[in-house]
Image 1 (cartoon, rainbow, N blue to C red):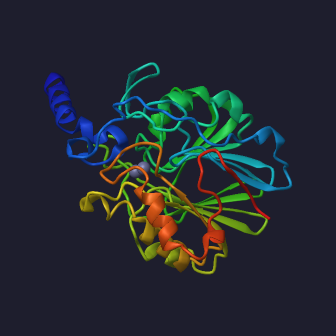
Image 2 (image 1 turned 60 degrees about the vertical axis):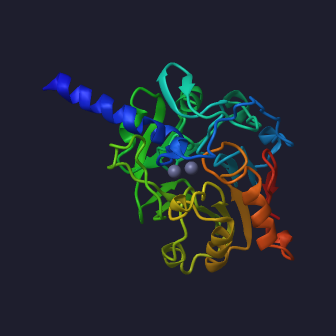
Length: 312
Ligand SMILES: [Zn+2]
Ligand SMILES: [Zn+2]
């Protein structure tokens, strides 16, 4: 019966809805994970200037959390964009119930400019933000989304929406995008078990960038990237505490280990300092990351929100 089904859905939602916010299982029920209650939101140290980037360069700016704007030798790519102050569920319009960011977005949708391709690694709310994706709508922009998440794009006006799954490759002109299997999950709400999660390999002009998205430590990533020369590994280093989170969100040391195992020349730490989704203190991931890389800090591409890395 339909009413009964709805009731079950709602009950499930009440029981697990908190878990869906931020995309982390039971996050808000665990001590030490609190919203940004003091309403402190600082401004980023840097602001990218994508209008000045040259198409013959590879330029990449960190927009906070897992968001990146890349000009990959003329192909403009946006990954996991989240520009609003809060992430979570959006019951109507751009009203969001969920956690508030600590550092403002260095760019707005209007400042992003033309985008050829938006990649959403998975449908967790800290990577897939409806208000942002509504603002970015353009018939000149293609979408790449995880397996069984295409329906989430219904009603949004983009050039194309394609799903990509582990091992698949998609070509956009000279740019190749390959989905890599990490150790994570992709359910937007707890009952969306069919939705999958990707890590991503971007390749153009013989240069390869690995975007880890969310993943726990796994040897499988280096196995999938065998014989790929990785210029830059963008690795999540936060949301590993409590210990039960660690299998799906690598610690800073595990993130570095994975970057090393894939032979990445440069590494870029992300998924820290923007939203509080876990128990570790906000600045612990980057402190541990820098400690673990002591003596080879020149291998870190950038580590400030809003900063831009340009491949030499
Ligand atoms: Zn996730
Ligand atoms: Zn995440």
